[in-house]
Amino acid sequence: MAPAGFGLDSLIEIGASTVVIWKLSGTGGARQRRALRLIGVGFVLLGLYLLVQSTLVLVSGFHPHHSALGIAWTA
Image (cartoon, rainbow, N blue to C red; front, side):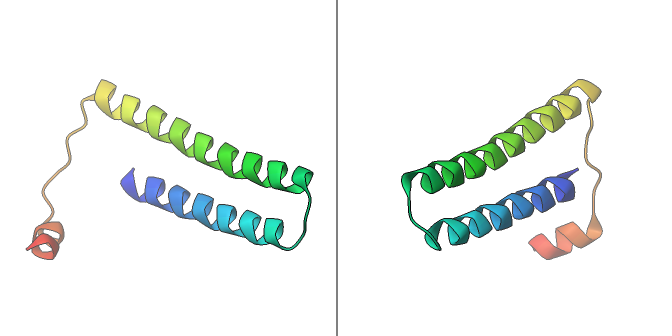
């Protein structure tokens, strides 16, 4: 579940960066409003995804297992 969240977050950040580059390539208030709206929609979608995933984890009582690789990486 966490890798999917990180991947989605990365895609949204790439999309937001693309929108900023698009916005900077032109001028006008309408273009700025559209760019901000696109970035905002991306982050709202990420927030909704995180809300749904965290609710599912809480409701299902999911508990992560030990990971030797994770423990080694942390150490």
